[in-house]
Image (tube, rainbow over all chains, first blue to last red; front, side, top):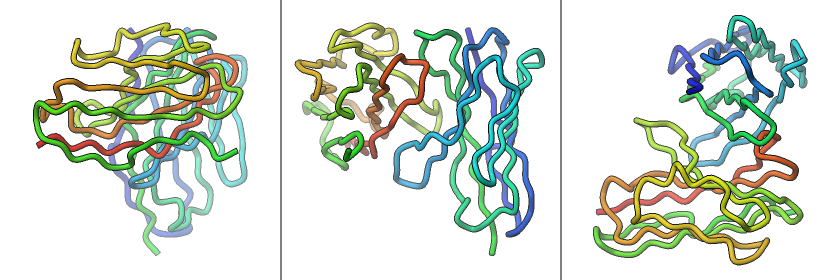
Length: 112
Length: 114
């Protein structure tokens, strides 16, 4: 059974800092890995999707990397801003017709 | 497109009452998912549909929960009778091609069972 872990559960950083959010998964045979953002009281918004054949994906100040063999992914946020404050969830898919398995998320607070 | 629409946004009910949550997926999406989110257990998939047919309901906690999708633009999740431990945020999501591709989430229904 696939398990996804995100540690720590919460993180607080000063504005402008570059930061890394970690995600680990137990079964390396994945189809893709996805990062989502959740604002308080809102639904999830997809940020990045990395296919199993890819090593990284970039969108603006966000960069997600994938190391399947070690069962790890990182989400890098450059020059963090208070508007980046949210919960970031990682999810993995083990097959094209398989469902997402989510981590519990990391709640990020960026202090002005 | 307006995105995934859920109603109601908030629901407060008493134990034993029936609760019905509603979802309208993004037009043209073949897959619809119901999730439950709690602090303790995180985000859990309850059930998902492909072209209105339930595919995997292994996450439905017990017989008190049921879900239907009578057509491509509407789905319901019903809890009868409701219990305090059902209190959670329930999300509906849809995807275009497969369950493993990008899913688009609704704003959720926050349910409180007293």
